[in-house]
Length: 340
Image 1 (cartoon, rainbow, N blue to C red):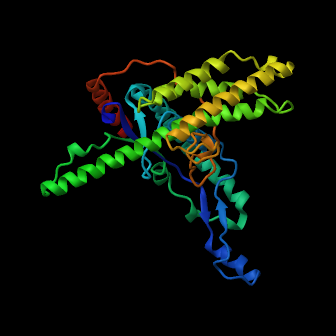
Image 2 (image 1 turned 90 degrees about the vertical axis):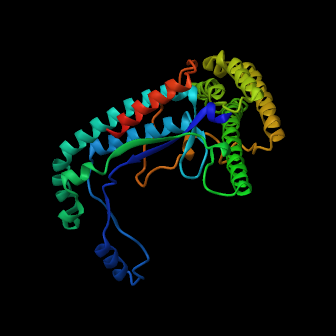
Image 3 (image 1 turned 180 degrees about the vertical axis):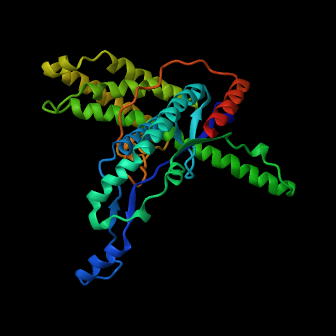
């Protein structure tokens, strides 16, 4: 059962935006242009060049990127699928992130009075003391937590209903799980398709700049796909392994210096993309490389403040599969740590 192979994870990152809607200025601008007061809104940046806040935004971007990389979509409520054998790595990495996030929050709070004084000069008449929370209130605006849930199963549904009604609801739960699992598998196929199709498009254009990261991205995704393949799709794993073998030994400089080698590599990439596309069509998945179901970092929904996404090391290729009781014990320890 899928509930034995994976769990649901939701990530929550809260942060003070350091922005404020100035209603008075918005009304003044509207009046000066003889416009309706709803024509626009003026938002102030309350801090100018707050380095520690920018570092927090950057770290939040890294955390979100990692979270989306090692999980698959599940529900519209933000929960994503995490394979059980990635749980220990995930909790270890998130614990490191939580420590780093907490340290940066403390550094930002220490620098907050200085940033606030600088804002008096940069904002001029727009500055208002009431826009700035007290130190104690400000600390409450930063947090990093994760919620962990088991995957629901119709057989575990227990409420006081008639047998026929309980059976119907149980079937609905199982159907929802099946649909979510299909969605997760579709994204995993799309991640591989996106990476292979992109490198094929670059290789087949002789004058297109070829970056080492373009080739590396394919092998990193190919390494990760089998580990996220909770649906045990053997063809997906086989194609990921084929992608790894085809691109792992390619030398960027050789491809740049030798057009014939580049053309051969482009042919191999296009052939593989075709194989992946046919397999996706057979499963009824969207084969367009810009489909919303791709695992590309660019589709991560950011907070109101723009987050700078930085690269992060890929998840290691091998990891032991823990026993269920080990996972539960570790889960309890981890949730206590995140709550502290």
